[in-house]
Length: 130
Image (spheres, rainbow, N blue to C red):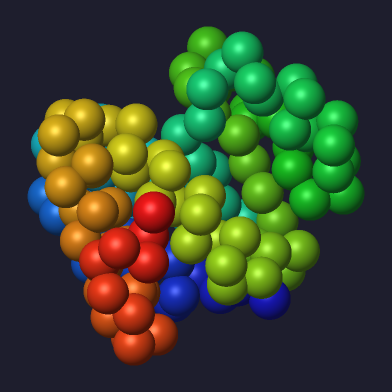
């Protein structure tokens, strides 16, 4: 089960991210663009997600994913129940949402460094990624 604190820790570790409190709701953004928001009760999380892929994601696991509020349907946004996520899934959703709002080069460079660190932790070299 993923927690709001794990979301916060991960989001704040991503380049250019800032935390904001908007109408009593914690949001994580780059400049003015929000990519993750916690519900007021911190039991669900909204995240940036390609609008055209949203129906398939929700249909694949409707007990986990759900539509945003009607006022937010026009945005690239999906909601997820944190209790239904494991840490790896939460990480994938938050990092992917962040990558949607930062320059492509920044996300590519950051993800490449992350990949190199993972290989180094396993004791491999750069060629192990190929």
